[in-house]
Length: 234
Image (tube, rainbow, N blue to C red):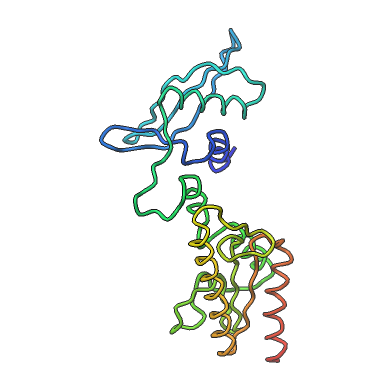
């Protein structure tokens, strides 16, 4: 199992990365994980809380778990570690706009660049022989960055996150601070529309792709836009 998959497994069991905080001395903290060990003689499963401190791996015994699946045993161990006071939830910074630590964790996971949909799209296009610039300004004097830029074809590609850009299929309004987030999303949509208009006025083709779109269908949109320019120039 890769490091990313192991981390995701721990997040699910704990109820989120924000619930994996190990408090250290001097107000420091670390992100903990649960290790399960099966003792062959007794077949009992013991759980240990592990974390890194000053470059060294530390661990503390949590207790025995007895569920039927690994996922359930991890979840049980996290509950035990919390009850013993070994871990706590992340505390929101005073200047955070998130309504809870869970929301803040989701916001942090929504990267603005090099997201998985972007990387998949780039990989497909590269295999098709297309070359492009990544995270670049289509126009030097316009402070707007596109995810993919084809300078010769004058094609700018944006891969939009469903939440931050208000996807009509998957966006769900926030229940807390609803007015704040409504204005935030509407502001993003207005900026997107303004960017599209400014680029098109300068002769650019704008391709917008939702993060949920199948990568092959997304790649076809981009290839079509680039090919249309090539056909028009020949």
